[in-house]
Image (cartoon, rainbow, N blue to C red; front, top):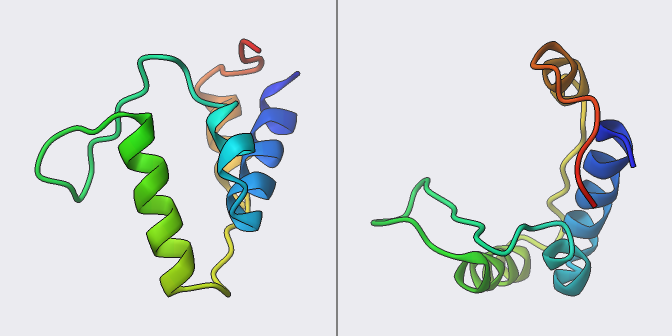
Length: 80
């Protein structure tokens, strides 16, 4: 799977709220650090995603600009 296919698959799962499919894109030692007090693992991050999606059911993301940035960084392929 190349970077564009991976990113599109992740985005589609994210927009659908499919946490099982989202989780399949995450590495075992996934850590999220952002607007949270300390880094969290995949289970906690997926829980936050579910809460966010329930609060904003019509929200969706797209990949405009992301693919170009990934390509510039040399991320042509990702591990499955």
